[in-house]
Image (cartoon, rainbow, N blue to C red; front, side, top):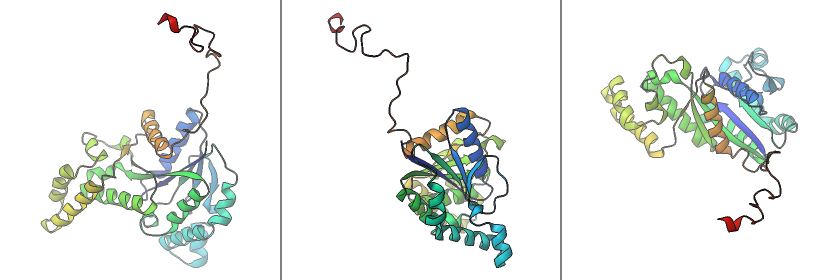
Length: 281
């Protein structure tokens, strides 16, 4: 079939690990194999089994203690260390996986890693060169829709990651199950500048009017940013997201078709396969 991977990114606290756990549980229920990988050197606990872990290479705690860096500087050091060891460490880890394997990389939440640093571009290029079909899953907290300025910023961050990584991209609006008011949710799944800009103008001062218009036009002209809602209490929600990702990476398209054992074989029933029934039409 091939080798497939999701890279789950997004701002800190947006629900990336919860998404990975929900996806793992869903795949377990439908008897589909998936392996979760931790790429966050600051992570402490997981709800899903971890197949391999960046902390076996470098951990934020050790970096902060030994180099005297702060948490943000320490995290950047860890990820740059990963970038320097892609062939040695990541290459060795990936040797254990081959055709039909599906990896889900749970990544750290510092958005500069995806927007303007080279770390994740190097990471995805390494995966592609190793034969993996990769999709980026960008998670954004659904509570951003309660503040139009925050939502616009989040949508622009998603667009920046799309441009930087140049991969099939699925944006997910997480924590929809926690929204108290979902009446206007659909307005944010396919952002329409004509609908959102008046709200943005009402929440910001007049001097930002030109900037707001430029941001709205940027999102509208590219027409690249849309979102799928994730409600972890609804099994269909994660199934829809997985289906879109499968389409993006062409998961299973080259698999051999499966024939059920109870299907007739050879065409001796009703003469359909050998043409004997043609005179009856």
